[in-house]
Structure formats: structure tokens, C-alpha cells
Image (cartoon, rainbow over all chains, first blue to last red; front, top):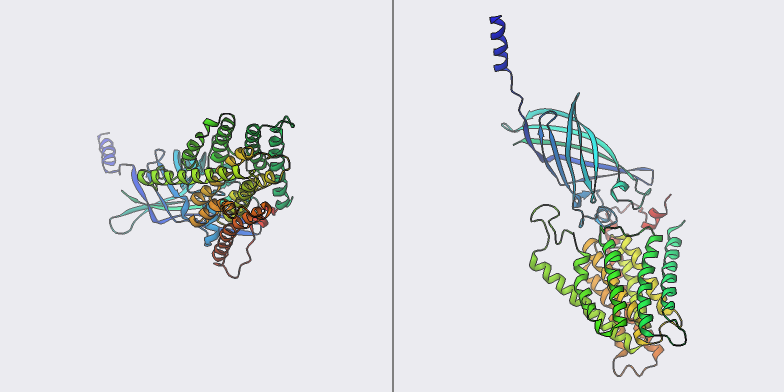
Length: 183
Length: 310
């Protein structure tokens, strides 16, 4: 019994202590890409070039916060980008940021189920998606990083962006992929 | 339903509402009172705009969320109220100066220009810049409003309304080509209401009777160009050309030229207003085409094409 007690004590001492790890989103390795249908025939792709945020990985106590500058929208066409920034769509002079802030996280196999408040065009709605990933690496030396990806679909009309539907689709397919560097 | 027909129907409905309300101000028909016509024409313009926006699915939201909402749900009712009061009590006309001072701050409220919407220190204007811009815009609006109201007192108001209508039509085209399509649609409604009232027979029998409609018209034109400039991509020079164009209707009323037949003076005024409006619209069209040439081999649809697509 004494031997067993010593083994258990040794395991407790040697086992890695799970600690919350704080990360800052690495803007150079973060992408928020989207696609919408164009008159029902093909996809028009776009991205946001200015993404920032921070997150904490700690199992069910994890938190995620992401901020996107709406005027960084880029569809490869200046005329279209200008229209997207106008009050007809994102209205960037009134609603300059798109944000997500988590309220609950649940560890699942291969990732995390994240629930939070998504705010776009002045409208806040709850949103849940699964973040896949969580592997870690060290790059450059001494800088620990981790990364996650997710995909989701939202209806832009639910956020007050209801112009030119169905010429430009209501369903917006979003792919988010980001890395964070440990603070 | 093709969008062009829907827009025409909305403009027609807006004009009809405005005309009916304005004509109600002429009661009793044998002894109409200019103040009553002025007040009811102001109400008519405001109501017509709301009806037209409803038909175009541009109804404003409450609480106001953007410049369009603040224009229709805050500024227009305020101007209508002031015009009703000013029509009843001449001494209350200085209230127009308060509207002029408040117009730009109302339209630009809760925007990146004056608030830290993207985090502390992110507002685009310093306090000094904010004061200078708002003061400048207030002076511009007061000057234009006073000039047009004075011009209306020398005619029967119809040439001024017609000038405002033409400028609004030009603003509609120019703003739509400056990446703010729904702003352009609102301009068409304003053009239809003001131009239609200018041509409505029996309505404006006295120089003071058009004052109310002119007040709502000039403030609404101001709101359109401010919205296009600060929330769309309307160039500052185009905004200035469009807003000041109606003042060119003053030139045929100058001493020496007033001796010319009144019909020729009205025609001259229309031509003078059309010139800067055309310049602004043409330049906006060129800039719009140049931006679209980023994909030279692409055949891009117009806004109408997208709106009509089912």
C-alpha cells in the first residue's frame, strides 16, 4: 500500500499541470473568407483583410474574441468593394466592426463547440459553431502557437443587410481559420 | 415587377400624397391663406417621402439605425414642425436656424466620424474638426435655405421648387453612381415630389405659400448629399455642385435681367440649374465606369439588373 501511495504521489508530481493558455490572434495567419451566390450561377468570393482578436484555451473555460474591420472587405473588384462598404450593405461608416465574443465553450472530439454573440451591421445574434484544431507548434523558436478552423453559414438579411437578394445570395458561407501566438 | 415601373409608381404615389395634402391647405378655396398652404405643403412633402419609401421597401427603422432613418424619422418631422410654426407665427422663422445647426449632427450621429465605434481613439474627427465641419455645414444650409426662400418671395415659389426638384434628380443619379444605390432612390422620390408640386396648378398663388415645401425640400437635399458624401463615395465637389445648383435660379432674377419675359426667366433658371447637375452626374458616371474597368473582359450587370433578377 505504501508503494502504491508513492506511485500515485509521483504521478501527481510529474503529470503536467493543465493551465489556461492565452493567445493573441496572429493577423498574418488569420483568414475570414466568404462566398455568396451570384444570380444563382456561381460563387463570388471575398475576404476580410483586417482580423484581430485573442483567445484562451482552457477546456470548458476557453474564451474567444474576434474583431473584423468591415471596411477591409476585399472581393477583388474596387467598384463592388465600394458598394459593399456603403449603406446598401455593410455601412462601414456606421458599423465599422464585425465582432464575435464567446459565451460558452464545450470540448468535443477534435475541437471545441463555441457559442457566443456575433455582431454585424449593428445586430447581435447568438451563434454556435465547432472549432476544429487545437494542435500546437513552436514557430519561430520560443513562440508557441495554436490554430483553429471553422465553417458556418449565416443569412445576411437577419443582420439587416437585405438589399439585392437573390442577385447576391442571402446565405453567406464563411470559412474562418486563425492561429494565435501565446502571450 | 420591373424595378423601373416600381420606382415610377412610388414617385407617383409620393407626389399624389404631397399634392393632395398641399391642396387641402388651400381650403377655403375662395379665400386661401398662404400660411396654411405653406404648412400643408410641408406636411405633404414629408408624408409623400414616407409613402414613397414604403413602396420601395426603404421604410425607415425606429429607433433610427442609419442616415436614411435619421433623415426621415428625425430631420423631416423637425423641419415640418418648424414650417408649420413659422407659417402661423412669422416671428418663429428663426427656428429654421436651429434646424440648420442640428441637421449635420443629426445625420452624422453614431458614426465613425464622431464616435469611437472601433475602440478608444478611433473616431475620425477631432473635437475641433467636428465643430468646424458642423459649423460650416450649418452655415451652408442656412445660406442656401435663406437664399431660396428669398427667391421664392420674388416669384410664386414654383421656379425654386422646380430647381430643387432638378437638383434632387441629379443627386439621385450621382449618389447611386457613387456606390450608394438606395440613397439614389430616395433622391428620385424627392425630385418627383418637389417637381410635381411645382407643376401642380392652383397650388402656389402667393410667394409665401411655397415656403414650407421649399424648407423640407432644401433640408432633404442637404440630407441626401451629406449621406452620399459621408456614407457613400460622393465626391465633395459633386456634393457642392448638387446642393448649390438651385441657387443659380437667382441669376435670371438679378436687376437688369428681370425685365426679360417671366417665361424666359424660368427657362433660363432651369438651364442654369441643369448645368452643374449634369456636370456632377457625368463625372460620377465616368468614375463609376473607370472603377468597373478593373475587369475589362467582364460584362457586369447594373443595379437594375440585380434588383430585377428573380
